[in-house]
Length: 206
Ligand code: HEM
Image (cartoon, rainbow, N blue to C red):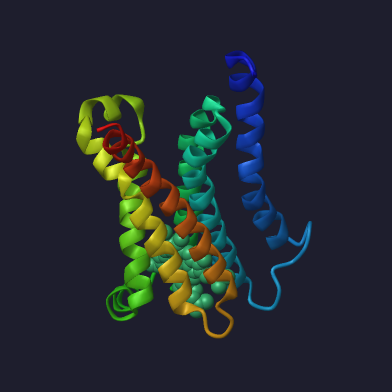
């Protein structure tokens, strides 16, 4: 068992740096220090941030089931950090689209959001993520009470919207979004199973 001190001063900073590494790689690849972004650098940056957004969302969603399976309760202390990294990567994905891809040209931006359904879905997911990130502080959690839990339960909806958004714009091979959809279904299944279990136990004892 890791002590609270080790967790706070060693494990958490290491995990934080590891989560930041993919972003650092995008920066160093941009300047061709570690690799390159290929023939279409803007699309590559957009896609990398988008994929990282989905991956971090799934990792954050996996924390609770993993904690329940392993009994390692300290895992719960990483959930907020991982959730905020999911938000960070999705937001960078959005900024890449807004600034580099669309060049902050508002008529095109509005038209895309209104007329391209996969972007509309992405925007809905992003708005929910912003609301969750903005209310992720302890004080607000206490202040909001049950409303906080309700809002933060929409993380599953964000996951579904994110994977749907990805699947919708895939042109040829849907294997990758299908893999993410399968992982998300598994995590949702764990959540539903956990919800139904106490009731089943109650019925069994009646
Ligand atoms: C939870 C929110 C979101 C997630 C998880 C997400 C994730 C992704 C992923 C995984 C891809 C595909 C990457 C690839 O092909 O390798 C993608 C593509 C894309 N996303 Fe998002 N995204 C989100 C929100 C948004 C938002 C808010 C916008 C813009 C308003 C946006 C615009 C785009 C665009 C333009 C593409 C590229 C489509 C193409 O290559 O033709 N996404 N996104």
